[in-house]
Image (spheres, rainbow, N blue to C red):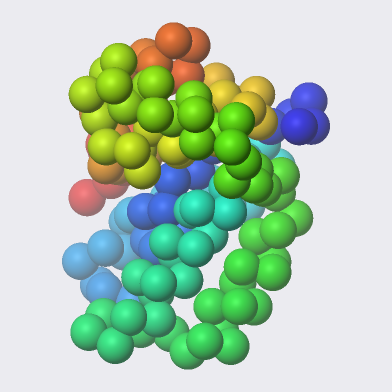
Length: 143
């Protein structure tokens, strides 16, 4: 962890950053503003989910394998939390305690492991605090 890493970006931040959908223009702009900062953390899970969704053949603005790999490489400038047995175990406990999906719990625990106080996500419940990791929806005001 670096001392400047305080926010963790969920997969939807990365997906909005590449969106070509005119209806998502404000969210794309906001996502790119977030990714232009230095205080972001990611996880291997988030990068993998990005790859799967961004290259999905049914996505109207799908990107190529090479484009996705290039983006993932560029985002590795941020601290990236690996998936470990420790995170798996903590995520299982968080899933049980808070009644959320394992995948959401793994994001919470990866962010905690990086020392992030905030998870930026459109998918998790904004305002919820998971024992010191709070969720914020950075798109709440985006059109």
